[in-house]
Amino acid sequence: MGFKNRKKDDHSDNSSSTESAGASSSRDADFSALEEGAEMNAAAAGAPDNSSCAEASSEEVRKLRAEVEESKDKYLRALADMENYKKRALKERSELLKYQGERMVLDLLEVLDNMELALSHSNADPAKLKAGLELIHKGFVDVLGRWEIRAVSALGKEFDPVQHQALSKITVDDAKPGTVINEFKKAYFYKDKLLRPADVVVAVGKDGAQQDSEADAAGTDSEGEGGERAK
Image (cartoon, rainbow, N blue to C red; front, side, top):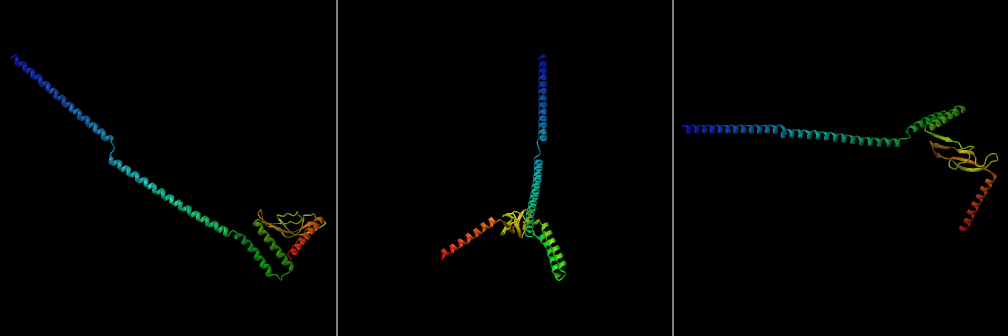
């Protein structure tokens, strides 16, 4: 009886141990399943959705393409505007150079109108005709002055070969040699540029006149000798 009871107790202990081991294994399996589920949830939460990324990337590409097209359109418009500006500026400059004297011509036409008016009254009183011509002359000088064209008289000044052209030389006792004593045409300047030199007569001393005569005579003799040799 005692042996049987011990066998029963041993069997009970073994059954209890088996049940305890089975329960422990079941709990371990449950914990492993929970850990795997948690890891999968964490991975799912951390990993990006491929479809969402693709949509976002595609939208960004569309935006970039739209910006590129807009920038290209602005560039082409700016380039076209620049080309039109160059053409317009070139045309305006060409017309300006072509018709640059237009305003001056209009001013001169007023002088011409006054001259024709004076000629239509040529049979009038000579004094009045002279007064009219003086007014026309003054108006013409004023027009030239508006366009910075001015006359410079050479009378009484020292001869300047740059601004004066000596047509003749005359011996004058009461004038300093090299001085302009007569003027056929005045020198004219446009701003600071000489338009034409003055045609003048220059005073020379007796020595200068004699030297000029000797030079002229020498030139005549040279021409005569040359003619004789040619014969």
